Length: 79
Image (cartoon, rainbow, N blue to C red):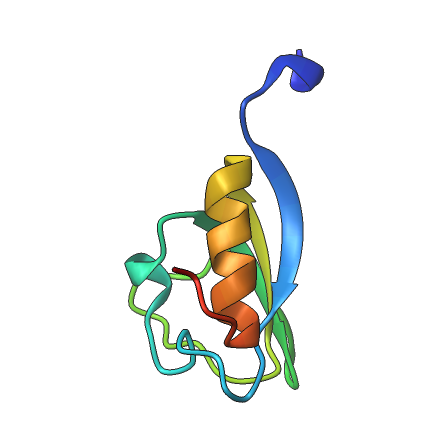
C-alpha cells in the first residue's frame, strides 16, 4: 500500500538565507508533520508556527512539491 502512494516523507533543513525563514507552516504547499530545532522536536505543529533558520522540517508531499521546498530551504532559485 505505501509503495503505491503518490507522496513521500522526507526532511528539509532551512538555511539562513532561505526565503522560508519567517514564513508560517501553513504557507507551505506540503504537510509538515514535525519540526526539529534547538529545543528538540516539535510534533504536529500548527499552521501558524513561524519557521526559523537551521530548523529541520519533516514533510509529506508529492515529489515535485518536495523539490520546490528543498530549493527554497537552501535559498536556491526555484524558477
